Image 1 (cartoon, rainbow, N blue to C red):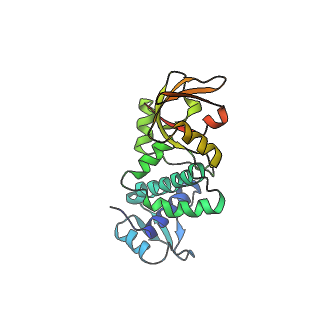
Image 2 (cartoon, rainbow, N blue to C red):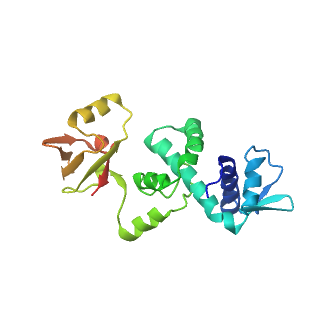
Image 3 (tube, rainbow, N blue to C red):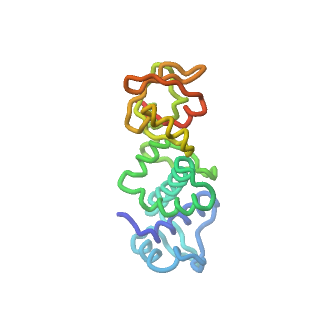
Length: 215
């Protein structure tokens, strides 16, 4: 059952308080819109939280949902700051908005896209999901920079991370576009690859901005 955004904010705060700060709970009079109103009543009705001695505490029934809420938020931070290049406060604000959309397997796709990161941009741990455990067990990775491929390997172009219009235009002119297949033939001293029937060479700096879904 999916809970409301207000309830998710409470769960996130409670998980961080208990798991990362060692606090037993959060005070009921905490000055936060997320703690007040329908969000708290919703979590109480689901038995996800309880109020004991004026503290809101996370119950075992709400532990998993709270952990997944933190996971979605920190994956959203990675997406905003690493891929969309939105740093600082703007990145944090957009991540707070976007995290509530990462349901129905969207979080798994983003985690795979980011190659199952273990920490957020603020160096806090990202709770692992099932996709992380599967990737670890099978050795199947997600999306990596072209620089991580070895000569002879190939994959589908996933995305381009450059924010430089000139670099973007250069790659587009080569046919380096999401969805196209790329075959790497050499990785030193330059990265030589084939897209379609044409062969190109780029330096390491530009190769780091081409992300490949191996396979």
